[in-house]
Image (cartoon, rainbow, N blue to C red; front, side, top):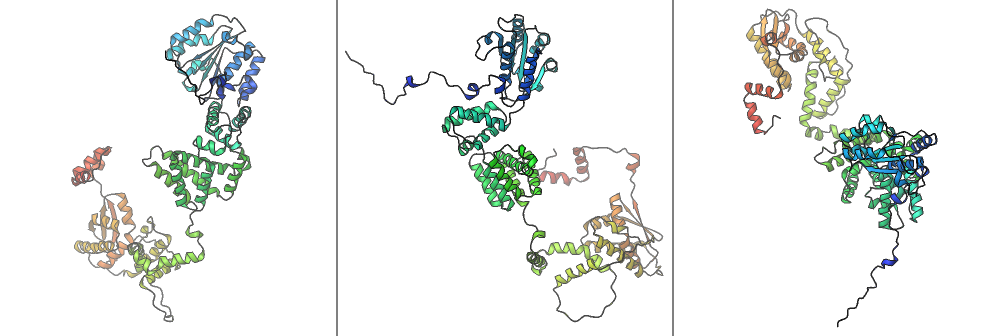
Length: 614
């Protein structure tokens, strides 16, 4: 007969050596059992204790607030306190009933509670019903619960807990005493984690615990869960680097380096930091929000009164104060504005990384040296480069536009009185000579005179975009033109001669590249009524534009036609539709249809460019 031998491996775990006590997570193992152990809700716990001591027990309470802040824990402590039970008293099972409204949200579930309420407690004084996530009850269940909640038996107390108070009916809220639980602060959470770490024999640092508390976002249960996870990974020693790496949190040094590069206007290195952060698996929005928090801390640490708003360790506070001392206040405000704008546009952006990179470039450009902050030697070098013949020749097209605005003023300005010829000097470059003449025109003291006569008036000197110097120069030029016209000129003016002189004036404006004025003049309809030249425009904008050119135009016509008594009159064409038809307000598509009827080539252009009407 064959015998089978069972060989136990020496490497197999010894099951007998394991503890018979089941493992409990810290959130359950260290759940508060009395009022003194509740963290961060001193105002609520004090109010509940006062109501118990004075015997003012309400029939219904509503505990609302974020997750993991002690709502259910406080409800259990309150239920034991009003019955006088110890934490380990088994009688609680007969007096305290907990119901999860998320899975028991029907009318039948509420009816069963209503039937149980009628039975008085076997032990203690009160039967307490704790209904968690009460906002999950259906509309019908809420309605079935109203009467019992308003007038329950004397021995019944209801404690409702929810994370979404706004979803509860106002009729339910009006029947409860409402207690709002707030988020647990970082200092309180760090203190509690230090106590638990000491009981568990875990060595840690304040900086590491601050990271856990900040990541928990006010929820103590989340902080304890992360603490258990980190202990399971790193053992009995938690360092800042381990916590930051496992919780996927960017350390403060990353943002300190970004701001240092921004203060030095070092865009390339700042962008490389972002690239390194993304390569480590972080999201660009995570980096952006962290940068905003860093800038906010730089602002807060500038004043001793706002230091309490910083939820970091003293060592990190000193780092922020050091960097804030070399950072300008306007830089921080502008950088915060840029970060907030990028954060707002992030979700709708098609290229989110580019959006964050652009925000970094803008922040680094806040401290870029401007021309005002350059040394005098660099300023002179920059000025020489700008006025050198090579640089001016390279921007010849731009120079023509600038000079064209001044040529008319320079040519029409009155000639100065002759002065003794100075000693001969080397002739300057042609372009430099033009620049010199323009500067002389700007610097020359010109006496401003107003022409009151109705024949020549300077209404055109108030055009938008002209500088004050050019306006004064045109005033002086208008006075000079008035003197050049001989009052004895009374030649007969014909329609043909008027049209020819008009065309000459239009051609001069075309050579000066005044496109808008040429277009307006070409559309005008001329009519000679005695000595009055009437020309019609189609709208008020054209009237304002030509009114500013009346001085030059009238001088040109009088001199060309040799008639000093000529006058100008501008009229707006009145169409029949303005008086007879009612104005119609069209949609964008209707406007487009009307435009296509007038110009069919517009539809061809739209199809060629593949444009959508929307």
